[in-house]
Image 1 (tube, rainbow, N blue to C red):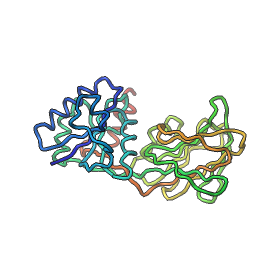
Image 2 (image 1 turned 120 degrees about the horizontal axis):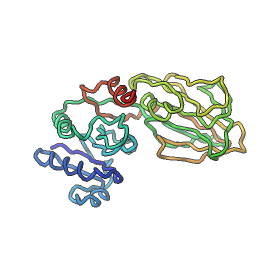
Image 3 (image 1 turned 30 degrees about the vertical axis):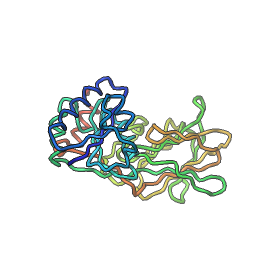
Image 4 (image 1 turned 135 degrees about the vertical axis):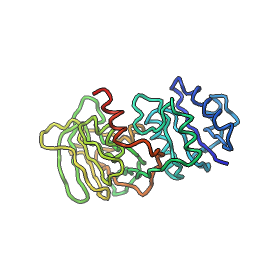
Length: 284
Protein backbone atom coordinates (compact mmCIF):
# COMPACT_ATOMS: atom_id res chain seq x y z
CA UNK A 1 0.00 0.00 0.00
CA UNK A 2 1.34 3.41 -0.96
CA UNK A 3 1.48 6.18 1.61
CA UNK A 4 1.00 9.72 0.32
CA UNK A 5 1.78 12.71 2.53
CA UNK A 6 -0.31 15.80 1.71
CA UNK A 7 0.56 19.35 2.77
CA UNK A 8 -2.26 21.85 2.10
CA UNK A 9 -1.77 25.61 2.04
CA UNK A 10 -4.39 27.16 4.31
CA UNK A 11 -4.67 30.52 2.61
CA UNK A 12 -5.50 29.23 -0.88
CA UNK A 13 -9.30 29.28 -1.38
CA UNK A 14 -9.25 26.29 -3.74
CA UNK A 15 -7.41 24.03 -1.27
CA UNK A 16 -10.51 22.25 0.01
CA UNK A 17 -11.65 21.37 -3.51
CA UNK A 18 -8.21 20.02 -4.42
CA UNK A 19 -8.09 17.96 -1.21
CA UNK A 20 -11.51 16.50 -2.03
CA UNK A 21 -10.32 15.49 -5.50
CA UNK A 22 -7.13 13.93 -4.10
CA UNK A 23 -9.04 11.96 -1.48
CA UNK A 24 -11.58 10.73 -4.04
CA UNK A 25 -8.78 9.65 -6.39
CA UNK A 26 -6.90 7.61 -3.80
CA UNK A 27 -10.10 6.16 -2.30
CA UNK A 28 -10.33 3.82 -5.32
CA UNK A 29 -6.71 2.70 -5.00
CA UNK A 30 -4.68 0.97 -2.35
CA UNK A 31 -3.18 4.11 -0.89
CA UNK A 32 -3.11 5.80 2.49
CA UNK A 33 -3.26 9.60 2.75
CA UNK A 34 -1.63 11.32 5.71
CA UNK A 35 -1.73 15.02 6.68
CA UNK A 36 -0.20 16.94 9.58
CA UNK A 37 -2.67 16.39 12.42
CA UNK A 38 -3.54 20.07 12.85
CA UNK A 39 -4.18 20.52 9.11
CA UNK A 40 -6.25 17.32 8.94
CA UNK A 41 -8.56 18.65 11.68
CA UNK A 42 -8.95 22.00 9.92
CA UNK A 43 -10.18 20.26 6.77
CA UNK A 44 -12.36 17.66 8.49
CA UNK A 45 -9.98 14.78 7.68
CA UNK A 46 -9.14 13.75 11.24
CA UNK A 47 -8.73 10.10 10.21
CA UNK A 48 -5.75 11.12 8.04
CA UNK A 49 -3.94 13.18 10.67
CA UNK A 50 -0.54 12.10 12.03
CA UNK A 51 2.04 13.63 14.34
CA UNK A 52 5.60 14.36 13.17
CA UNK A 53 4.58 13.72 9.57
CA UNK A 54 8.10 14.35 8.23
CA UNK A 55 9.30 11.31 10.22
CA UNK A 56 6.61 9.01 8.87
CA UNK A 57 7.48 6.70 5.95
CA UNK A 58 5.90 7.91 2.70
CA UNK A 59 6.29 7.05 -0.97
CA UNK A 60 5.93 10.69 -2.00
CA UNK A 61 4.49 13.98 -0.76
CA UNK A 62 2.08 16.39 -2.41
CA UNK A 63 2.51 20.12 -1.91
CA UNK A 64 -0.71 22.11 -2.37
CA UNK A 65 0.24 25.74 -2.92
CA UNK A 66 2.89 27.78 -4.63
CA UNK A 67 6.64 27.33 -4.85
CA UNK A 68 7.06 28.67 -1.31
CA UNK A 69 4.92 25.86 0.08
CA UNK A 70 6.99 23.29 -1.80
CA UNK A 71 10.27 24.77 -0.55
CA UNK A 72 9.10 24.62 3.05
CA UNK A 73 8.04 20.98 2.71
CA UNK A 74 11.39 20.00 1.19
CA UNK A 75 13.18 21.58 4.15
CA UNK A 76 10.93 19.62 6.53
CA UNK A 77 12.06 16.44 4.79
CA UNK A 78 15.78 17.30 4.92
CA UNK A 79 16.54 14.54 7.45
CA UNK A 80 14.12 12.02 5.90
CA UNK A 81 14.26 12.53 2.14
CA UNK A 82 10.84 11.95 0.62
CA UNK A 83 10.28 13.13 -2.97
CA UNK A 84 7.86 16.03 -3.22
CA UNK A 85 5.53 16.90 -6.09
CA UNK A 86 3.98 20.35 -6.29
CA UNK A 87 0.36 21.03 -7.25
CA UNK A 88 0.39 24.61 -8.46
CA UNK A 89 -2.01 26.88 -6.62
CA UNK A 90 0.19 29.96 -6.78
CA UNK A 91 0.74 32.70 -9.34
CA UNK A 92 3.89 31.26 -10.95
CA UNK A 93 4.40 27.69 -9.81
CA UNK A 94 7.79 27.37 -11.44
CA UNK A 95 8.77 24.28 -9.42
CA UNK A 96 5.34 22.64 -9.29
CA UNK A 97 4.78 20.03 -11.99
CA UNK A 98 1.01 19.57 -11.64
CA UNK A 99 -1.55 22.14 -12.75
CA UNK A 100 -5.05 21.92 -11.28
CA UNK A 101 -6.68 21.00 -14.60
CA UNK A 102 -4.46 17.91 -14.96
CA UNK A 103 -4.59 16.70 -11.35
CA UNK A 104 -6.08 13.23 -11.77
CA UNK A 105 -3.97 12.48 -14.86
CA UNK A 106 -0.76 13.31 -12.96
CA UNK A 107 -1.82 11.45 -9.82
CA UNK A 108 -2.28 8.37 -12.02
CA UNK A 109 1.28 8.75 -13.27
CA UNK A 110 2.50 9.01 -9.68
CA UNK A 111 0.68 5.79 -8.77
CA UNK A 112 2.21 4.02 -11.77
CA UNK A 113 5.71 5.29 -11.01
CA UNK A 114 5.74 7.18 -14.32
CA UNK A 115 7.99 10.01 -13.13
CA UNK A 116 11.57 10.71 -12.10
CA UNK A 117 13.08 12.42 -9.09
CA UNK A 118 15.62 15.22 -9.38
CA UNK A 119 17.77 15.21 -6.25
CA UNK A 120 18.89 18.78 -5.66
CA UNK A 121 21.50 19.73 -3.09
CA UNK A 122 20.54 22.02 -0.24
CA UNK A 123 22.54 25.11 0.58
CA UNK A 124 23.71 25.10 4.20
CA UNK A 125 24.13 28.36 6.12
CA UNK A 126 26.47 28.90 9.07
CA UNK A 127 27.61 31.80 11.25
CA UNK A 128 31.13 32.02 12.60
CA UNK A 129 31.02 33.90 15.88
CA UNK A 130 33.72 36.17 17.32
CA UNK A 131 34.97 33.29 19.51
CA UNK A 132 35.55 31.14 16.42
CA UNK A 133 32.59 28.85 17.06
CA UNK A 134 30.48 27.95 14.03
CA UNK A 135 26.69 27.84 14.39
CA UNK A 136 24.40 26.10 11.89
CA UNK A 137 21.57 28.32 10.62
CA UNK A 138 19.68 25.86 8.44
CA UNK A 139 19.12 24.58 4.91
CA UNK A 140 17.75 26.30 1.83
CA UNK A 141 16.89 25.06 -1.65
CA UNK A 142 16.64 28.39 -3.49
CA UNK A 143 18.91 30.82 -1.74
CA UNK A 144 20.57 32.13 1.37
CA UNK A 145 20.51 35.93 1.47
CA UNK A 146 22.59 38.25 3.60
CA UNK A 147 20.88 41.63 3.64
CA UNK A 148 20.55 44.87 5.55
CA UNK A 149 18.73 44.81 8.84
CA UNK A 150 17.61 48.44 8.62
CA UNK A 151 15.26 49.20 5.75
CA UNK A 152 16.58 52.68 4.94
CA UNK A 153 20.31 51.90 5.10
CA UNK A 154 22.81 50.61 2.58
CA UNK A 155 25.49 48.36 4.10
CA UNK A 156 29.20 47.73 3.48
CA UNK A 157 29.85 44.05 2.83
CA UNK A 158 32.90 41.93 2.20
CA UNK A 159 32.66 38.85 -0.03
CA UNK A 160 35.21 36.02 -0.07
CA UNK A 161 35.27 32.65 -1.82
CA UNK A 162 37.26 29.95 -0.05
CA UNK A 163 40.29 31.82 1.35
CA UNK A 164 40.31 34.57 -1.27
CA UNK A 165 38.72 37.97 -0.54
CA UNK A 166 36.93 39.03 -3.73
CA UNK A 167 35.31 42.38 -3.18
CA UNK A 168 34.14 44.96 -0.69
CA UNK A 169 31.18 47.07 -1.70
CA UNK A 170 28.14 48.98 -0.54
CA UNK A 171 24.89 47.18 -1.34
CA UNK A 172 21.58 46.07 0.08
CA UNK A 173 23.01 42.57 0.39
CA UNK A 174 24.24 39.44 -1.37
CA UNK A 175 22.27 36.46 -2.63
CA UNK A 176 23.90 33.03 -2.66
CA UNK A 177 21.62 30.98 -4.90
CA UNK A 178 21.54 27.40 -6.06
CA UNK A 179 20.76 26.69 -9.72
CA UNK A 180 17.21 25.91 -8.57
CA UNK A 181 17.03 29.35 -6.99
CA UNK A 182 18.39 31.18 -10.02
CA UNK A 183 14.80 31.87 -11.13
CA UNK A 184 13.82 33.29 -7.73
CA UNK A 185 15.17 36.37 -5.90
CA UNK A 186 18.46 36.27 -7.80
CA UNK A 187 16.63 36.67 -11.11
CA UNK A 188 14.85 39.77 -9.78
CA UNK A 189 18.25 41.18 -8.75
CA UNK A 190 19.66 40.74 -12.26
CA UNK A 191 21.24 37.30 -11.98
CA UNK A 192 21.35 34.76 -14.83
CA UNK A 193 19.12 31.70 -15.17
CA UNK A 194 20.83 28.34 -14.55
CA UNK A 195 19.48 24.91 -15.42
CA UNK A 196 18.85 23.25 -12.00
CA UNK A 197 21.04 20.30 -13.00
CA UNK A 198 24.12 22.53 -13.45
CA UNK A 199 26.67 22.05 -10.69
CA UNK A 200 27.41 25.52 -9.39
CA UNK A 201 26.46 28.40 -7.11
CA UNK A 202 25.39 31.89 -8.04
CA UNK A 203 26.49 35.04 -6.23
CA UNK A 204 24.27 38.04 -6.97
CA UNK A 205 24.61 41.49 -5.36
CA UNK A 206 21.42 43.30 -4.37
CA UNK A 207 21.38 46.94 -5.54
CA UNK A 208 25.16 47.31 -5.39
CA UNK A 209 26.28 50.95 -5.28
CA UNK A 210 29.01 50.40 -7.87
CA UNK A 211 29.36 49.53 -11.55
CA UNK A 212 32.27 47.16 -10.94
CA UNK A 213 30.51 44.06 -9.62
CA UNK A 214 28.35 41.61 -11.52
CA UNK A 215 26.69 38.27 -10.69
CA UNK A 216 29.25 35.47 -10.46
CA UNK A 217 28.87 31.72 -11.00
CA UNK A 218 31.26 29.58 -8.94
CA UNK A 219 31.81 25.84 -8.40
CA UNK A 220 29.43 24.03 -6.06
CA UNK A 221 32.37 22.89 -3.93
CA UNK A 222 33.42 26.51 -3.30
CA UNK A 223 32.64 28.07 0.08
CA UNK A 224 31.25 31.60 0.34
CA UNK A 225 31.97 33.98 3.23
CA UNK A 226 30.16 37.29 3.76
CA UNK A 227 30.88 39.81 6.50
CA UNK A 228 30.02 43.37 7.47
CA UNK A 229 32.80 45.90 6.92
CA UNK A 230 31.16 48.54 9.09
CA UNK A 231 30.15 46.73 12.29
CA UNK A 232 27.97 49.66 13.37
CA UNK A 233 25.43 48.41 10.83
CA UNK A 234 23.12 45.39 11.10
CA UNK A 235 22.37 42.41 8.88
CA UNK A 236 19.96 39.50 8.71
CA UNK A 237 20.13 36.14 6.96
CA UNK A 238 17.12 34.59 5.22
CA UNK A 239 16.68 30.99 4.10
CA UNK A 240 14.47 30.69 1.00
CA UNK A 241 12.88 33.96 2.09
CA UNK A 242 10.98 32.06 4.80
CA UNK A 243 13.28 31.84 7.83
CA UNK A 244 15.06 34.95 9.11
CA UNK A 245 17.92 35.22 11.61
CA UNK A 246 19.51 38.48 12.88
CA UNK A 247 23.31 38.27 12.76
CA UNK A 248 25.72 39.97 15.16
CA UNK A 249 27.69 42.65 13.27
CA UNK A 250 31.11 41.02 13.83
CA UNK A 251 30.00 37.54 12.75
CA UNK A 252 30.81 35.95 9.39
CA UNK A 253 28.13 34.21 7.34
CA UNK A 254 29.29 31.09 5.51
CA UNK A 255 27.36 29.29 2.77
CA UNK A 256 28.30 25.95 1.27
CA UNK A 257 26.62 23.15 -0.64
CA UNK A 258 25.36 20.39 1.62
CA UNK A 259 25.42 16.66 0.99
CA UNK A 260 21.74 16.67 1.98
CA UNK A 261 19.42 16.61 -1.01
CA UNK A 262 15.79 17.43 -1.70
CA UNK A 263 13.82 15.20 -4.07
CA UNK A 264 11.65 17.08 -6.58
CA UNK A 265 9.28 14.94 -8.66
CA UNK A 266 9.26 15.67 -12.39
CA UNK A 267 7.39 14.18 -15.33
CA UNK A 268 9.10 13.24 -18.59
CA UNK A 269 6.76 15.29 -20.79
CA UNK A 270 7.60 18.58 -19.03
CA UNK A 271 10.84 19.95 -20.39
CA UNK A 272 12.74 22.55 -18.30
CA UNK A 273 13.07 24.99 -21.19
CA UNK A 274 9.41 24.59 -22.06
CA UNK A 275 8.60 25.52 -18.46
CA UNK A 276 10.88 28.56 -18.74
CA UNK A 277 9.06 29.70 -21.86
CA UNK A 278 5.62 29.08 -20.38
CA UNK A 279 6.20 30.55 -16.92
CA UNK A 280 8.61 33.43 -17.59
CA UNK A 281 7.96 34.50 -21.16
CA UNK A 282 4.31 33.61 -21.69
CA UNK A 283 3.32 37.28 -22.02
CA UNK A 284 6.20 38.23 -24.33
